Length: 555
Image 1 (cartoon, one colour):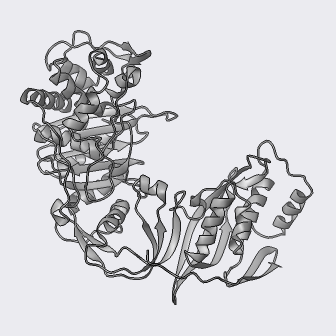
Image 2 (cartoon, one colour):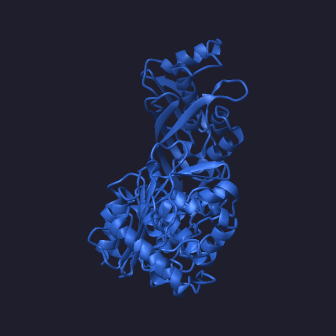
Image 3 (cartoon, one colour):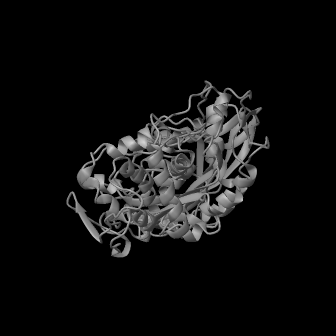
């Protein structure tokens, strides 16, 4: 952001009661009618009762306590009294800073706050304001919510402070700033040269923000004047990009061409829209080009930046390790008991099934957990980590796809967590981009780092893997994935897509979540895709149809 001189604002306040509704007139801060909970002087009565010590400081919050705390906070904020509003929260310092910056840095005035009906301690409210900067003005309207809790010290009702109270796009540590944007806008183009917008592709918001942050300074555009969310340390660590909320004057956008296919992106958007909490990525194994990315949640790019246990899709990497170490072979007998205890943990298969006198191929196709964990005593703690990094190019924190992304985590673990990591639990973390890349590596025979923007655009270096699988390992891995697509847990979703295909399903248990996250990764021809449906259940039933549909659409 460029430097801007801050001008102190004079505030003259004159409170009144109009028709039984609290009204506040503020000169300078510019406040409208404060329509909180309706008329009848209810706010005055509850505040008076609290003043006489009738409110209790222990036990569940009463409706009166919630209402009074919310009214006090919202009234002070609307009246342009950030210190007073902050005093009604659980974090006075953080609240003071953000609420002060709301007017001074965000240049927001004429603030009107209207509360909705409380549900327990949560109070929704709407915000209307005007963004005003150097003669330019635009309205801003949005919905937010606050939660009233008991203070940690005295038990008095306070607003549980988080930056999202001020605006739902804010994470703790973020700020709102209006001014000449330090980053010019960009016009993102698909692989055919047509502009991509969120109106056309709703889930691309985080991707477009990331493209602007990465290429805005070099794409040939000029900055405009905007109200933006400026990310703090925590958000930047999570690789969240700054976000434009209101554009007061347009900048001149530069252009950035991506690898996205317009038809496949449209298909991906359509597929994830059918299911809550779904994410998917489609790419080309021979090059690493990302052809589509979509998320049901349009606010966060889980497909690129998610960090989730991948469940049994991780068995692709584990299988390659077992093949290399001669601990498994496709058609040789392999144990799949109901249970296997390792490191003090008792592991079991889905619904406690077992395969008697079965082969490794049968165990892979049916996703037998114990077939993998039973090999843990024969492995070093670092084996899986090295396999993921050296062969599949994962977990080295060096991918440069063109926008923020997470390239997986496979930490070195011991005892039971090491055993769990072999089946994609423990400390292993992935996202659909990572698992699409895993399927691509199997299909191509070598790791190609996925990318959204060609490296020729900015001469950046793509990540590489230090070694490739042996011909024998690769052949066996393709065989078990093809068998799974034809006869195993992926067969229903992949029906009619063979014979040049392979797949793996996965279900990842998550604490305090009734249903597992459903995973699915597969390839067909020169396409590979992976998807996850959080809290969806079995991957073959949830993520499978999404992935299979895109593989079919791209052929």
